Image (cartoon, rainbow, N blue to C red; front, side, top):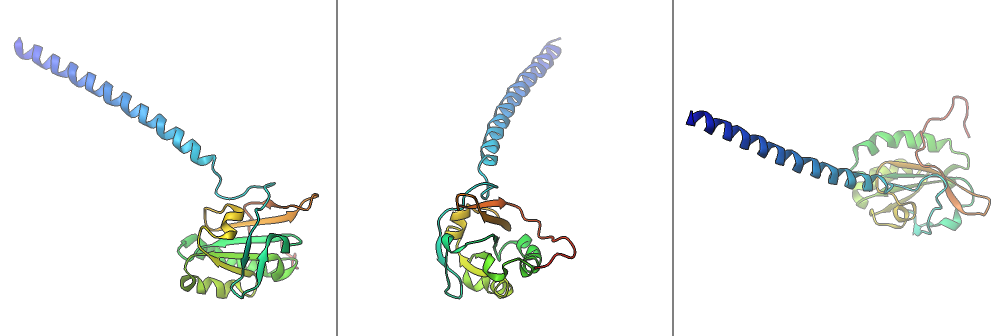
Length: 180
């Protein structure tokens, strides 16, 4: 009989310990859900209707580049040589930009990272875009609030003359038969 009482008490203690641990896990899961919810509210780039911030930079060829110098619609591409999806998407961006109305003047490509590592990307982008090489805290990434790569956005001037994002995830596919 004393063995049976000991086993029942031990099983009861294990049940209470299991309940306490389960309640602790549920509490932590709620904390993590709140943290993840806060992360989702912080966008990785500007969205449609958002105004592009001021930027003053120059291209890798030394051409000055500011928000005010972009008069018409503009296509922005952001890539990093350390990003595998960027390597996959770069050729599609180059082909899409090649057919962009307005040509090279309406396309701005930003390569984020070390200049030596970016050289291959710059060589591919140079014929179709004005190319900026900068670190992740550079002028272009700051103006468009870019925190994820690759990112491709389209911007146009609105009725008030502000440069605003009209598409924050350009598909890089043109309908057949449409070329500039």
